[in-house]
Image (tube, rainbow, N blue to C red):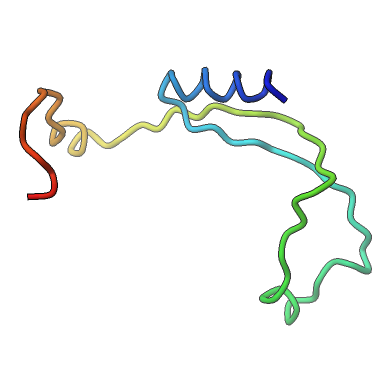
Length: 78
């Protein structure tokens, strides 16, 4: 598992959002109906990892310009 963790850490270091895509076989009789769906939890075991993807998040220009990249001594919790 450490090779996956390293891949994720490397992508995060490059400011990428990491998404894992996995697959799991599931019997049709166990798939919830629309009424049962509110009380059903998505299975998170016996998954087969298909891919780890790094997504670059592009912020709108207005947000990028509003950020100050200059270091300051001001505290956020004033």
